[in-house]
Image 1 (spheres, helix red, strand yellow):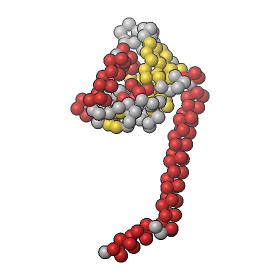
Image 2 (cartoon, rainbow, N blue to C red):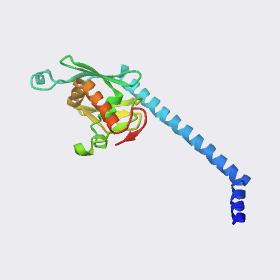
Image 3 (cartoon, rainbow, N blue to C red):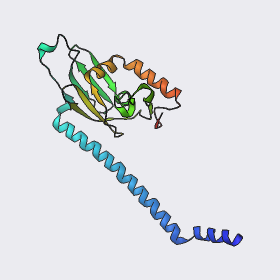
Length: 192
């Protein structure tokens, strides 16, 4: 029995095996470095496209003025802040909102976050430092926001952005309360 353990210990100290383990660790470290570089490159590429196509990160929409009497407020400006942590939305009735990327990410109207019913709704933690990579128009009624955690399935209608903007403080406090109740926090990733 002792001889068996000795052989196992000897095999662990085998220089060839140790070299292989060290090589694998180095390869893994290089792979992580490449992954992070690729993520940064995607973010930079997205920003350069946005800068090229949309000067000053301003998206503007317009509508027929004859429709204004019976329609809900319409955004006249959607601006992504330079730090990509805030989306500024101005509506034609004068209302203006600064919506944090964190709030928009955790309130995303996607099925991934909201589920298909209230019971399926997911609480997402660890999004304090999330940034918005892209703001893409969807038809004439919404924008699709792409976040740096690769979430990009939420389509934010004008009405939903207005609703979030009007109750941002209450929604954010509710989000913080839900995080605490589920044992999650804003810095550590997690879903419940």
